[in-house]
Each structure stands twice: as C-alpha cells, then as structure tokens.
Image (cartoon, rainbow, N blue to C red; front, side):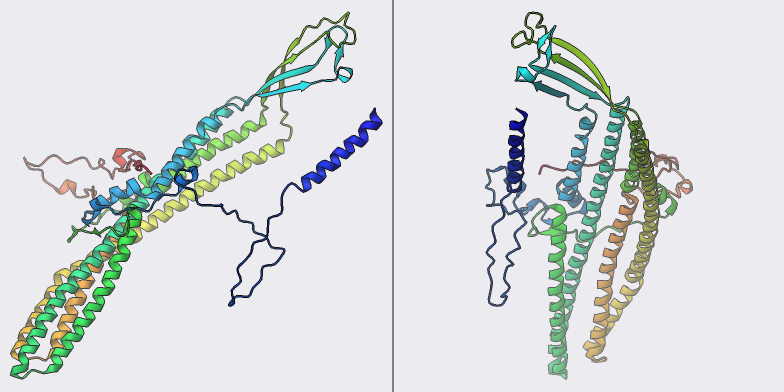
Length: 528
C-alpha cells in the first residue's frame, strides 16, 4: 500500500506545482498607435501593468458614488459678502476639511476593533478510515475531534490598545482643527487678494474719468492755443489704463477661482468683497500671543496627544513580555461501529478542557520593541519642541509684518496721499490757465494713481499678515484683543466693570481646548 501511494503523491505534487506556475495568464500586448512623427515601437517584452476599468461606472453602479458632479454656482454667495460668510461656507463644504473629518470618524471605529478579543478558533479533525483512525479498546472508534479555542491577551493589553487608538483619534482631531484653520486662513488670503483687485479696478475707473475730463479740457484748448500733442498724450494714458484694467480683470478671475476652490462652489460664482474693509487692530502683547498659541494651536495639541499616545504604546510593548492564555474545549466522538473490539467498546463521547499559552522566551525581541516605542516617544517630544519654536518664529515674523504694513498705510493715507491730491488739483488749475505744461499734470496724476494703488495693496498685505498671524496662533485675535491697559480705564456709572486681567481668551493658565482658551470647536462638515 505504501509503494502504491508514493508515486501517486509525487504525481499530485508535480501536477500542483505545474498548475501553480500557470495560474496567472500573461497579459495581452497593447497595440500602441504609432504616429509618423514618433516612429517608436513597443518592445515585445513590455506588457501593461496598470489596471484600466473596462467602462466608466453608470450612475446606478456602486463606484459611481465616488464620482461627484462639479460644484454649482451659488447665488447666495454672489455679490458683496463679508469674509465671515465665506468662512462659514468653507468650514461646512471644504473638501479637505471634510476629508479630515471622515479620517477622525474612521479612527473612532478602530477603537472597538482593538479592544475586542480575536475570533475564537474552531477546528474539526475527521478520521474517515477506521483502519488508520484512533482506536480505543475501552471506548471504541474515534471518527472525528471537534476543538473550540479562544485566546485571551495578558491583563490590561486590550485596555492599552484602546488607549493607543484613542490617542490616534486625538491626533486626528488636532489635524481636523488644523485643516479648518488652514481653510479659514486660505479664505482670508484669497478674500484680501480679491479686495485688492476690486479696489484696483475701482481706482483705475476713477482715474480714467479724470483723464477723460483732462482730454476734454485739452481739446477745448485747441481753439485758444493748445496743441494736439496734449490730446494724444491723454489718449495714450487712457490706453495704458485700459491695459491695467484688463490685467486687473484677470487678477479678479484668478482670485475668484482660488476662493471658489476653498468654498467648493463653481468658479463662475460672482464672489465679491465688501467695498471697504474695517481697519484691523494689531495686538500689542507678544507674550500673550505666545501663551495663547501654546494653549490652543492644534499642531501643538496634536504633538502632545502623540506623546501621550506613545507613552501608552510603551506600556503596551511591555505587555509582550507576558504570555497570552488560550482556553479551549475538545469533543471526541466515539462509536462502537467499526471499532476493533466492539464487544468491549463503550461508545461514549469524551469532553475535555485545555489551557495553552505562548512562551515569551525571545526577550531581546521584546526589549527592542520597548526601546522602539520609547524612541518614538522621544521623537514626538522633540517634534513638539520644534513645532513650538516654529510657532514662536511665525508669530514674531507675522507680527512685525503687520506692524510695518500698518505704519505704511498710515503714512500713505494720512500724509502722502492728501499732498499728492493737492498737487494734482493745483497742476490741473495751472494747466487750465496755461501756467504749466501737460507733463506736470501727467506726472502728478501718475503719482496719485501709484499712491492709491499702493494703499490698496498694503491693505491687502496687512489683512493677509493678520490672517497668517491668526493661523500661527491658532485662533482669532482681533475679536478679543488683550486688554493690556485695562487698569488705566476709570469705570463710570454707565460703564460695565472690567474683567480681571487673568480672564478672557488670552488667559495664560487656560486649559487647552477650553472656551476660556479661545479654542474653536471643530465644526462638523456638511453633507457630501
């Protein structure tokens, strides 16, 4: 029997190996279209490795849910809107924010997975041939054995797994808050860019009207001794303004498209800013901004959550030094039929319990796992310090930028622009009287135009600098500026009492994520 079985077994193994070698079918060659300009030929040994779906899924098929239609034009957001309206839209509909939100949801569903026992194992061993099956003289023929086993990790392992998973959720929540702040900052930057372009267009239109009036004046002087050259110069300047207006229209379209991407609306939406923006206030206490950033900036809170998660991971790695216990039940069926000694066989089934555990003898491997988790904890701690240093540097940089832009705006708006306007009016009056030439008027007009454009640009740069400063701090700073001169204010009967110096959103000891610390609550995105 053994001699007949060996060739059969060897043939089965050979057939199996040959069959395994030919399971995968070789891909067919791709017929590459060869143009006359590119006579390159496809190598015969090269086959396609990318998977291409045979057709685009229809709307009723499951994969069609991943293909969303293009965003539509939003009439509610058309026309002049405050920046807060666009921020609310971005927090609800921005796809990057929604992706971060669903990442948090996915990690939350990991907690019940890691805190639940593994599936029990059921096995059944069948002995169909009585002649080569277990035979017991007192019990009989054993046709099959049924085994049920459940593994239990060491005490506290499941709890630590859940705590590590919860740490991942906290890190993802910080990433969600950071995505929201990134969206808010991007909306504000695009909003101020759009404001600058709209303001530039308005200034160009106003100066065009001035040039048209001057051209009319130059034409009226032709009868009293004026020259045609003045009229031609005015028309040349009008053409230059038309060219700048065209460039400004392109800038408006570009900034609208950038803003529409953050809002998840069609770029054809007529997004507009308010005609005038309120003057922004710059906080004066740098140290309060540093303390506020440590308390509420999501990146720093995420780093701290990562450090706490890694500490739990170190404890979890130490659990591997202890064995996992396996408890099981065994059922052995017994029959008198086909028993070798049916006269003495009882035919009663057997039930047994067993206990098993692994032997953690390779302690060097487990020590390496603990060291790995400890080093990861140190790495995340260093990343927290690096993020903190980067935050302080950004706050200082954007604060200096904002102060410089504010000083420049005050200089241009309060000192230089009034003088340039006065110079322009005098030049126009003297030209009408014939006291100055046309070059003097054009020079004054150009200077006024440049100062007006510079004011609009610096206003936009100031707004973007404050938006970047708020992003570096992690919360809005102009809504609740620190009252560093509160003690100098004398309350009157109609004045409410001032809060204490250590209260408010800039409180130094405010816990992270508390309402006093100024941390905004994560906003749940709208439906996909």
